Amino acid sequence: MLTQFRLPQADVWNSLPSPNTPVPESPFTNEFLSQIFYSSLKVRTPLTIALVYFTSVHFINSFVRARQIRKYNETAEKKVTADELSEKQLKKLPAAPFAIAKTSAFKFFVLAHNVFLCVYSVWTFFGFTSTIGTIMNMFEGNFLSSLTNYKPQKLDIFIHSVCDVESGVFSRILNNEGFHNLEIFGWWFYISKFYEVIDTAIILLKGRPSSLLQSYHHAGAMMSMWAGIRYQSPPIWIFVVFNSFIHSLMYLYFSLSCVHIRVPNLFKRVLTSLQIVQFVVGGSIAVLHSFVWIVDSSGVLTDDELKWISCIAAPEQALAILINVAYLMPLTALFTAFYIESYLKKKASH
Picture 1 (tube, rainbow, N blue to C red):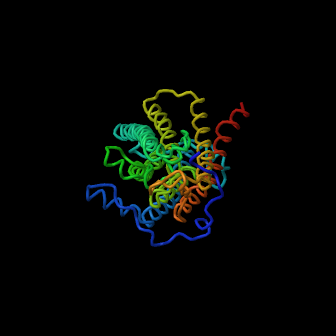
Picture 2 (picture 1 turned 90 degrees about the vertical axis):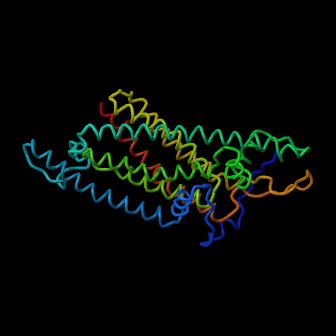
Picture 3 (picture 1 turned 45 degrees about the vertical axis):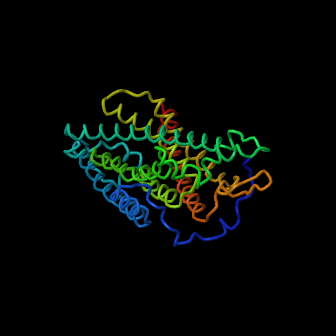
């Protein structure tokens, strides 16, 4: 085996990340894109947007809720206030859509938005999984095969492809050969997290408040993707692959709903289950990266001079894992609560 499982590299987890860690060089030749790339990787960019988004949504929620109460009171025998209603009753209040949400232009925009994100997610999933396959072929035909006393297994090749920052999925060689590396796929995926807040705007304009699950999900995804791309942490490939796959299905469902194609309730239930599975399995695999050691491919190696390096080789890469795991634990709990409320309790009540 050309990979080993050992305890994590101690100094990586015992040291604080350096505040002077240089920003990766832009992978783009276009000057405008490069400027956006550098600006987006400053920590204040996702942090400010996430905080403004999160606080704004919960401020607007109270306004939307007041509209729902007014609409309910128009036909109710007894007038009520929000304080007089239980959480369950609040959830059953009728939607109070804004005028724009009733227009054909808005409905077309919502459809186009969902179709775009579905197509983009499919492109990301298949594009990046293809990139991993390309890198595996390069490793199999390159330094791994030069070690005559070792026969690399597919697992060795895969682990090297995702863990080796210099020659793996972050390698700039890919860009020169017509492929996109994880930095490009990952950065665009990171940028898409800002665009996805339109999901929340659509919910609010349709006259329903945005849930904590919705706003926490979007705000946390910005910070998690920022950390992975800013510090080129190997496990960020999991976020890109798993999340793009789930989003392909999710936005397909939204698109079908826009054109009034009925989707079986089983599909929605399975989709929610897959979201929970991706958080648990993805987070576990991310942590597992810290126990993986690979053969260093940066120098000339012989069978007698194998140099082993940790997959997580810098405190900054470890920080990205911690941020993602810290984000995923509450998110998993919120999705689990949503699953119980939406499917198990409803089934029990019938």
